[in-house]
Image (cartoon, rainbow, N blue to C red; front, side, top):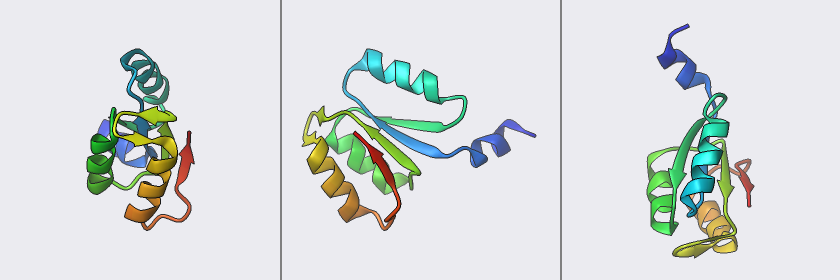
Length: 88
């Protein structure tokens, strides 16, 4: 199986974290089984949501420009996915 076809089969996760060390740890941990996109603040989250559909979102409770609770509300408003898993 080619690398491109493997990438298409992996679930896409958005990792929202403003601590660069923890963000690197999370993405390295997830990269084998998931396509992990990253966002470090509220503006980046909104941009990523406009670019892709996600299977799950891992989110820090507090990020610049948006709280975890505010993020959940914003995600629910901007996506049609009722079953989107959001982990804070």
